[in-house]
Image (cartoon, rainbow, N blue to C red; front, side, top):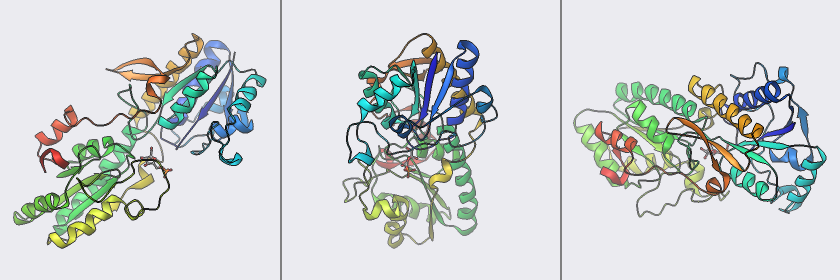
Length: 356
Ligand code: F6P
């Protein structure tokens, strides 16, 4: 058996743990030969790969990033180096010439959509859900999320002591391109006073009112805001699509925008921090190491049993798999009525239109 493996899209804590688990299980259980494509789909397009022996994937469990490299714009159906041409036939040919039996594709929403299209062309693929944003459909968790939330939560705690000492409003902008999972979990774990997420738009004046009320009681305020958060009926439309348009909000970030807008309305000093890629780099948490390892082993089982066109998932604590078709081009949003939103409200955090 000869298996390819690649990591697509942005890097994420836990990628190496998945590579290790897939390769070790297939080598040990099936005596498989494993090829690692370099720089995601670019490796498949340009036939760049390396053999992964058992020793090559030993000692990488705790290392952040991906030993294979990745490329967030490489897409066989729109190859940037060929004016966006569809080179998927070439990719299929490369796959056959290498004598592969299957490819394990680790990535987020964009990567899973490409995996689905390759499966439709006849490539036996298994997907593994990766993203710190935790927003892939039909899986309760993606690996990388726990690490991002842990780092962001520590940032909140550090900002809290500054807010308390100076009586300031401290804003932390977290990642989460379209969804508020990181901001919501971070806000609850860090005890934020206001949590702003894309799914529950807010009004500047309402946020200002809460800050003023807290000022009147000599209380500082911590606000956690997801990068995709939106102003209700406002002039802002932030990151509706993945594009590179240089709109000022995106350049400065919604956290800095909120600071600017709040300043005329409240007396306290305001400081805004954009946490950025710090929440995506480095070693995975214990939870993510375990989840990634389990995902990798399950992906290897799917390969060994010939179950393709599937993405590994975890649902209600159980490992399972779902058709890639159901995951491709989908986003799992925070439901305004979900338990986590209720939990945040129950401990007194304000959340966008829910109670601002
Ligand atoms: O999807 C993961 C993510 O980290 C988002 O939270 C963020 O919006 C985006 O990727 C950043 O992408 P890049 O690393 O290309 O700037």
